[in-house]
Length: 456
Image (tube, rainbow, N blue to C red; front, side, top):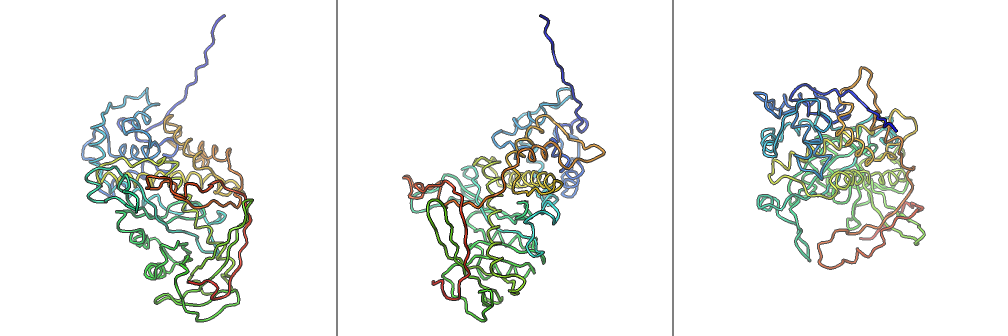
């Protein structure tokens, strides 16, 4: 019996010559050659002579490496060139890639991130705004870096009563748009400086027309005053230990008070969560500089505060989906900064792709889009070198968007999961490890309390 063969041929359009490996698959349409060249030109990083690995190619290599965190840079290079067999591609070594990254430096990656950062969508996205205010959140997290003498000297290690952490860490503070989980700005540095120090560097991106959701760690008087000075509104959780004075009471149960030199409204509430495992009640105190209790009632602000968890979802996507809890690669501080900006840029590019797909599809909330599906599909597009050059008619959805829309997650249900330390420093199982972390369907009730029911 004669054997039959099916031969599939396709045309791959890439940049010419030595620039061919410089792409990000279909995501190149979001971060095109012109954008990368602009970042290089702005920072004076365009090569003086054409090398085997041009500066533009190095930028795309770093972005691709952020999407393939389980691979070394040489393995990432092989993925970028896997579909370019018909094109003469320079043979490189690990040392050549190291030298190219070192020549590039940090500034082009920071400039590229500045070009990409933003809410990633128009105001039509559901949940993006509250009473006309763009809903954003600030929070911090920590990333492990290699345990080298250089990093230990600069960053040190965190400790607790049980042990010393295995790796030095940097603190990353971000400003995230809650509606799309896109990054509006970021700052990072040594963990020892604290998240509020890095968080203050984000004030440059706050403006009137925003409402910033803040956790208790950012509720100090100086930090809230810095936010208020930008003319942005804030909604912050504050500790029960504070004793704000009652200057006036409002009909919605909130009251006027003062933190340092700024007037605030205080909302005290009791939130009860009921699951199949029983009922759990917590007392919360929120502070806001939105003083109009008619336009911004207490019940609406309490419900809005739950959106702060979108920044936690963004960190989960970066640390779990992209990094897979891995330690960052570089053993130099410049290399770490370069890698972090590449990681944030790659994350932002994927969020833009998700926002484009969901925005042109009526009735689809970005919350239902799977970041993991977008990431896996984008990786396939990089290996296949697909969709690098856009057609004359730009498809905002593309292969990545179609994969996301074909695998939408169910509409978000109210869920609760107990907070627990999952990676303790103790040599023994800490008590939080015995907490049942399964999530349950839940019902939520909110009661605004009268003044004075929360005792310090």
